[in-house]
Length: 268
Image 1 (tube, rainbow, N blue to C red):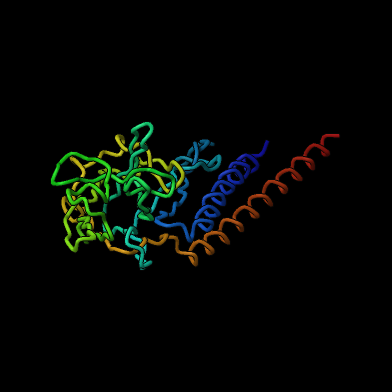
Image 2 (cartoon, rainbow, N blue to C red; image 1 turned 30 degrees about the horizontal axis):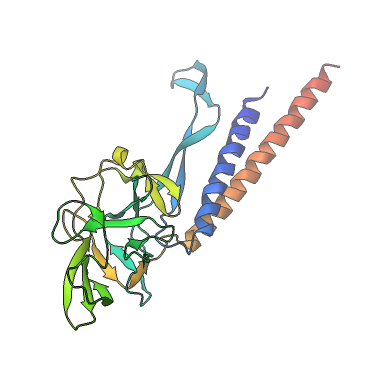
């Protein structure tokens, strides 16, 4: 069999995966806090045909996926006017916890709401973690965790994550602080759906969760959400490149197949 057929057949498989990555990026162009991915290639083992005075004569045998890398660059904060919406401007992730299993995840999606129990939660019910009443232990952020019993009329967050509750008697109090956490190798994070990242321990969390702005974490942009960092124009350019490469390699496969048929017919 011609090596060109094997090489191009491997390329067809890899460019198909590249199209999958690009297609997913484009599909998430409006997903809150989404971080785009890109696929990198590496050549496979080369066959040595011999050597001469210049050096070894080798023919490559195709291509493989080197890695699929996430781009954690900043997305643009967009004002929503919703008090429970938070965007991270800089490094770090929100820490959220499944109330049923206790499993913690990272997320950049700050599209939070306050549930009937007063907890700050994600769209799928994950509790947003932070510090309550000056504690250094992570716990669920709750709007009603203050000592005033007259009832919370409204609340607001600061750029450092401080949650201030405004009570019906005209008083106000700081009742908690949203926490952020950074990690040494965010590429080790695994997308778990619903804008969540799992495999937190393998990503090397930096120390403990901290208040926004501390230990290299970014600040919060209040009443806002972080937009997807997908650059649609560059994704469309990559799409065209991948499409042309796929078509070219498909042509090499059909040409190699035709040559093989011609060689077979010569022996008849």
